[in-house]
Length: 310
Image 1 (tube, rainbow, N blue to C red):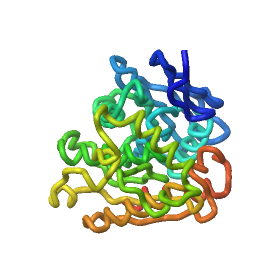
Image 2 (image 1 turned 180 degrees about the vertical axis):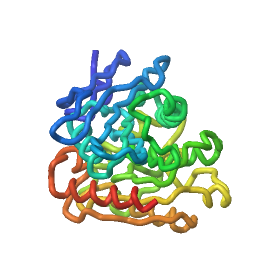
Image 3 (image 1 turned 180 degrees about the horizontal axis):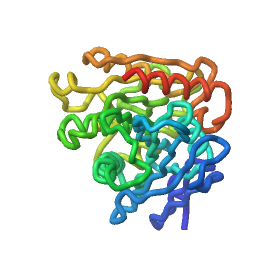
Image 4 (image 1 turned 135 degrees about the vertical axis):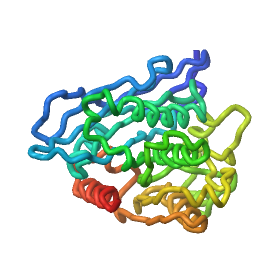
């Protein structure tokens, strides 16, 4: 039995079809409020498809006001990642406190066992879960579903974009109002290489991204698949007119910064209200690897300001 595909330290695909993932440190939930100012618990979104989530509820002593809801999709090239990873748990719990927002972090099914668009469909179903559970789930008693935001990092930023498109096209969940998107270091691509991707020093990054796309794209598709290449989405001008406001976060040292800047420019040309925010001296998904850093706290502050501008 041999290794047919590998992302070192993260993923191995074996010749018999088995996938071996190397998980980092994970975090348990705490149903009681912690010294950090929030509590957390795991929920089942769809037991028939093994779609689960982790909720973060900020402490709000002396207040009974309704809170916005942030639905977050983790990164990992569609092939790895989990709501349980310590970096995500810490970042999202602290974000719930900083923004006074209820956070639902979604564990969707992973490629290559479950290729796109399964991740998009799984994450879209989290909105149905919100809609159905708001009247019975105690942690959603104060959820304001007229102020729902979609966010995620890397592949999760890509998912946020594609879930928003699906909401617009299918016109479902009318009482779940998507106010805005907050993609962090979004992961997109295309068959045509960008200027940075053609540079010799980028060969390692290009090869890894090509492999992740190869493992996650639908069989028979290439990087011009609409989920990968945002320019290929079949969306009318009227539908773009309903696309929510977006703030795109990029990192100055991130190989994917170029794609994030292109994404923001594309949305602007489509008439979408969009803002680009750069963390100049930071690397890809720094907020997951360094959830207690000053740069991460600034990101949480920026995200909070966007959420509360609605």
